Image (cartoon, rainbow, N blue to C red; front, top):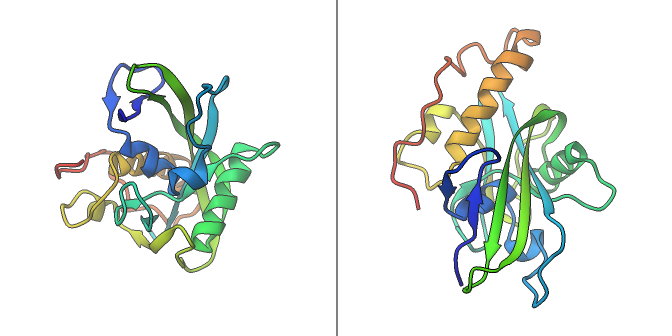
Length: 205
């Protein structure tokens, strides 16, 4: 089976399919329908939650393949009739026990899953939502081995096994947080983001 091809909307860069994992935070079988002989006629929408508290961002360590043991964002498929924001906060609560308020969408990624002949089987649209922490201590749900807070500096180091592009998306979220949420919360975000967006310096999958 070929890896899915991922593209950012409006861009021409290709990314490894682990970004699908990092943005969904759940198993492929749990988050998305399995491939079928008949290609899906419409894109499948999914979401992730990026939430900060005390200048740290919340990640979960995956319990299931692919990327078992890697740290990723909590998230999953958007249910029928559910808004993007509602899906993000629901998945966050289900996977970590943390309650949050959705602030806004800050990035999205197209995922094209192709068969061995290059035919398109599934098209995922993964939508990242910045959320404002309300309450709760992270406790890993069924799809995670662990759930915990990390500083942005920790995501740039080589000590953590991260799904691809987790550090990049976290820095994008931090930039929005610093501009739109931190100014209304003087005790948060003062030192979290300094205007730079370093990528993970480690070799990733």
